[in-house]
Amino acid sequence: MNNKTGFNRLNRRAGQRVALLKNMVTSLFVHERITTTKSKALEVRRHAEKMVTRAKVDSVHNRREIAKTITQDDVLVKLFTVLGPRFKTRAGGYTRILKLGQRFGDAAEMVILEFVERTQKAEPAVDDAAKAKKEPKAPAKPAEEKGAKAPKAKAEGAVETKKPSAKRAPAKKAQAKKVAASAE
Image 1 (cartoon, one colour):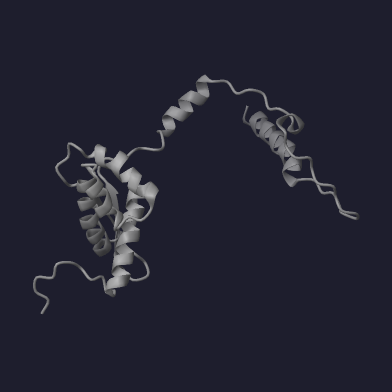
Image 2: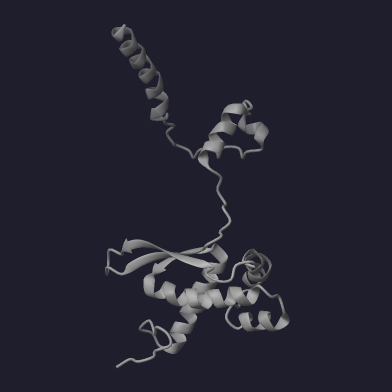
C-alpha cells in the first residue's frame, strides 16, 4: 500500500532523483521549454513553480533558498531578473504541459513542459520574405576582398576535377528552352 505519498520517486534512489530534478529544473529555466516524460514533467513542474513564486520577491533569503537547488549563477540571475518579474502579476500556473504522444522505445507518454508566457526568439517567416522583397541585395564581392583565406596549394600529382553541377547547369537551361519551344 502506498498511501499519502508526497511525491513520485521516479524509480530512483534519493540522490539520483535529486540530481535529476535539479538538472531538469535548471534546463527549464535556461531553455524555457523541455521535452520529457509525463511523470518527470509533473515533478519538475512542482519544483519549478515554487521557485518562480520565490523569485517574484528578490530578497537575500529567497536567493539563498533557490541557490540550494540552482547552482549555476547565470541561471539564478535569469530567474530573479527575467522570469520572476515576468510572472509578477500571475498568481500561479506558470507552466503548461503539452502532450506529444508515446515514445517508440518503451511507449512512455512524452510531453513538453514550457512556461506559459515565453519569449519568442524567431520572427514569422512571412516578415522575412517581405523584407527580402523590399530590400535589394548588394552585389557579391570576390573572395579576396572579403578577407577570405587563400585556397590551399595542391599536392603534387593531385588531379584537378571540375564540379559536375557546373556541367549540368547549361544543359538544364537548354532542355528547359526546348520544352518551352515545343509547348508553343
